[in-house]
Each structure stands twice: as C-alpha cells, then as structure tokens.
Image 1: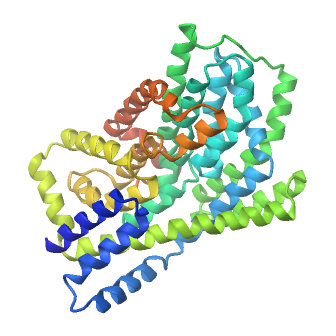
Image 2 (image 1 turned 45 degrees about the vertical axis):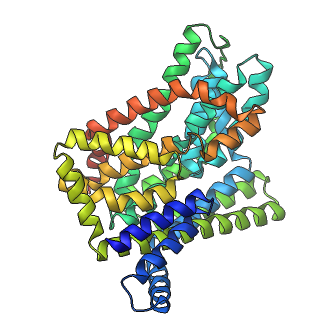
Image 3 (image 1 turned 90 degrees about the vertical axis):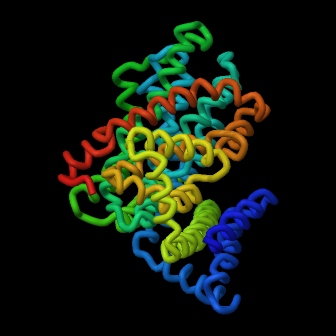
Length: 434
C-alpha cells in the first residue's frame, strides 16, 4: 500500500505541475518501486528491464506501420477522395456540409487511425465551404471535434491494439471486428443531433444531389482507398495474415497508391516517415512505462485490492458498468486515449471479468469512453486542431458540443448494456468473441 500511495500521489502532483504523462508515470513508478527494492539503483534497473521487455512484442510493430499508412494517406491526396465520397453518401441530407464532415471523419479516421489527423484534414477542406454557405462555424467545428474520434473504434485501430496488449492478449482481430458497430453508432449519434438542428432550421437547408454517373465516378476515385480496408479486414478475417502483417500491407499499399496518384514527393515521403517515427516514439514510451506501472501494481497485489474494493461497493453489473462509464468519462477529460487505456485497463478489467463481462466487450466500452474524452475540454487534443482549422475561438466550441456529447453518451450506454452490439459481428465473421 505504501508503494501505491507513493505512485498515486507523485503521479498526480507531476500531472498538476504539467509534467508529460509518460514521464510522470515513469518517475512515479521508479519512486514507488524503490519502496520494495533495496536501493534506488535496483529500482532503476528493474524499471528499465520491464520497459524493454514490455516493448518486445510483435503486436506493437503494427502501430508504427499503421501510423505511417495514415501519414501517407494524409499527404498523398487520398483524404480528398474520401471527403468527396462522403458528399455523395450524405449530401442529400439537410445541413449537408455538417453531415458530410461526420461521415468524412469516420471514413478517414478509420483508415488513418488518427483523430487529430482526421479533424485537421476534414476541417481544413470543409471549413471554407461551410463559411461560404453561411453555416454557424462554431457548430461545424464542434461537429468536427465530436466525429473525429469515430475512426479510433472503426478498424484498423491503434487504440484497440494497445488494449489487446495491456489486457493480456485479447485477440486483435476480434477487437477490430467488434469496433465496427459501436464506431458507426458514435457517428450516427452526432448525425442525429445535426439532423434535428437542420429540421429546426438551425442549419442551412442546402442539399447536394448527384447523378448516378457522377456518384459512380466519385466512388471509382475513392475505391482504391476503400480497397485498403478490404485488404486489411479481409485478410484478418480470412486468416491470411495477422494484424501486424496487415499493418505492413496497409503501409505498402498506401505508398504504392500515393505514387500512382503522383501526389507524393520524396520530401513528403520523408516528412511522413519522420512523423511516423516521432509518433511511434511517443506511443512506445507511454506503453513501456505504463506496462511497468501495471506490473508493479499486479506484483504488489494492488490490482486485486482495488478490484475487491470496487466489488464491495456493489456486485451489480449494471451499477458497476455505470460507475465505470462515469469514472472513465470524467478521467478521460484529462488524459489522451493511449495513457487512459494503459492506466485504467489493468484496474477495471479484472473487475469486469469477475462480473462475467467479456474482455472484448469491455475493450470497446473503455475505448468508446476515452474517445469521447479526447473531444472534451480541457485537454481534448482534437479541440485545438478543429478550432484552429475552422478559425473560431476555442471557447465558442463548448456550448454546441454539449448536446452532441449527450447523444454520444446515449450511444455509449447502448453499447455498454447491449453486449451483442460488440460481440455479434465477431461471432458471425470469425466464429468467436474472445
């Protein structure tokens, strides 16, 4: 308990003083480990060994490859083709430019795996058109913020890869397939609120219609990008390759596609690879120190103590799932999705499994919660990007975001209490749910 007290207090103080989360976890873990080891040198050596062994995982190789594929898509002009496809799919709805931003975020985010890149690409493309059409720009920026995390649930998802690792090996292929319906529900919840606003007259009634020939031409231009998803998920579902091998195929396919489009120069390729390297370093440092912290908590018995304390509060699964959602929504406002998964999964997952909740279902629940968290003040990463590309003050996004959060939380509760929304598709396509 002394080690856990030091871990919690030091980590909280370091976050309060603005120390990056990964460094805060690392420093707090070393100091907590010092209480159960003879010397500080021993604590440092054990910590370093645990960080290194935590990163020795074939599954983690998928993360840099998916990041690289997303960067190549962003610089290779593929995002514009997906936005055009979104125009065809929902351009017939009232308030079409707002609805298009949601669908475009889901399409691009699902392929790139980055909420920030999705918000930046979609917002930069649509904001000038929305402003010219007379849209309320804070509302459009808020819709961009709320929709950008959808792609973190829709595979391929780096967040679900991290959850697979930290949860003790929950199959990545099952998690990927399980994320489809919840991710689509998240997008539909935002679209429903925008539709209500349009019917009330709070959004322009512009409608974009396409002839069959025009729609087919747009679909044809977007087909190569969509084919990447078919290659990845078809290969995984068909047992042709693992998630890591699928990531390699995605990076190679995106590189070839960008070269065929002649939209990728050597300079852009170098920038994409450098950005992928930096992004990978950030994620891997977070994974290493968080896995070390989880090992310390498990080896000192702290996880079981916390689990027992939670189950003593209530043994009712309905009550405890609601408690998990409330805690994750609150704590997710201060943490990005990767540290949130790494910190809270080892604490809450044993309780969930004790209640008979599938680790796949729980993985979707915790990821859904943290997806909402990265769109909320005060530290939501997509907030700053969406406000900048839309050219609106950050403070003007809070009010239009609140009803969107309400609809997203309603979708979250639906996913939480209807496990079939997460488990039905893996059972149909893979014949398994774990």
